[in-house]
Length: 637
Ligand SMILES: [Fe+2]
Image (cartoon, rainbow, N blue to C red):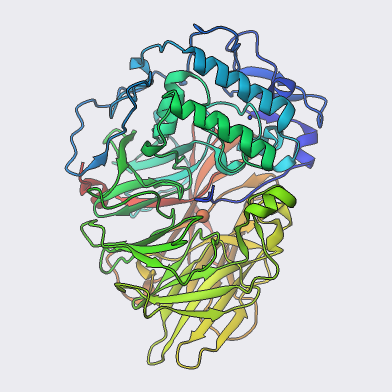
């Protein structure tokens, strides 16, 4: 069942990390059109003499005629379960708007690919596709490994088809009673194999869910039906540019920018509807479940009783939410509030906001004291404050013209800062910034207010060799630090808590914004491949390794971000903080099989108490969460 095989690729991987950006296809040389819509294609490349992809849809087709019918979408392994077309919503879902000239009819909520009509492809559509091919072949071919699809989509990074709800056997142990609900994980899964440069962050979001109900485990994989996904699905061709990989260097930027402008002017897509991929994470707040990507606003999704995943649509909180929102909102389990932000390449570079317990968005708090555009993927909250990191990765358009070619890069001369603002601030007047040289976090794990002290503590992996973050992730080391900020003196103290390369950290979700003792993280081998899980006890103040639990998945086996599921979600006893289970999808590259592992969080070996065999491999992805049955039943849809 191995989907991608190449010894060369296995030894020459180039990988990137699990985030996408608010900042921002030579295929004919690489991807020969298959003789038919086969699920197997042979790919030649300048790097590898032979590269075989199997079980992956290849949608390369001739662009030489104006009446070419779009390629038949990849067929699911089983007939698609029809999605409800009578879904009603009690919340405002931002409706896609199309220009009068567009030929695109975005499917209504619940429409399946089976109901798509065949579009008539216009002359402009064909012309712009030809321009794309010229750019991809001659102006900006995917020569760098970080954007070469042969590397980026090798092994278990290769995309899979959608899969309707499918029952799965428990092959080891017994599922604990608290696993009553659904585990869902997001990740990039390009609808079409890239025709040019492709970065890991550029893939369409696909959700992989495992629903536990009535003693059954049901697995399902569905794309988030974003505006981009639907437009390209109908046209049978990539249309929107790959934001992360498509604008490298001035010439490529100008060329692809011109093609994009042409496509917009001829009505092929309308950026007002959002160009996000929704491929990064999920969140549950305000009795709604969302798929998230930071270059767009949330997409509301729902789980059906049968275990299927439906995309409800873009959610703008009754028109109050615009542009974009972080993929890492922080949910206070005690209050039900959700805290979030967006960042932008133009002022205000940072805007903070939150949602009340009903999911009603509160006014924006623009942060003008963020004076340069910084790469802000994550943040943290305490009961009193919101905490942001102004790191050395930012946007530098001049670098694109005279430097490396990338508009996003690191600035070694910049001093990193931590910004602290009251979490219910109406404006930034009380925001304080603290210089923290060399502190570059992509993810934050947790933070809290120190009792009886005017201080806060932040737990986060500091990215060493930050200059490699976007292009050479395998060279990055994520060193988890405990950072104490004395708000009275302004002194910032830092304590490394493990020497390991670990990231994708989580705590018991009930302890978000509260003092937490235990942290669960993935072991980078290298990032973003996760070869094991560690549990840290960060309660001490000594500079020592705080590992108190560890499980490595074994040779050739890789998981993802761990997630903690409490045995008793109702308990607020700090002694019960680690009473629960650590769960993750784990893929065996030797057998090509994937499993869902349930590990005892209190066991020093993170003992596996149950394993579910999944019906087919689950590609490596980004962030996930567990939603209880009670929360699923409370969903406002
Ligand atoms: Fe992330």
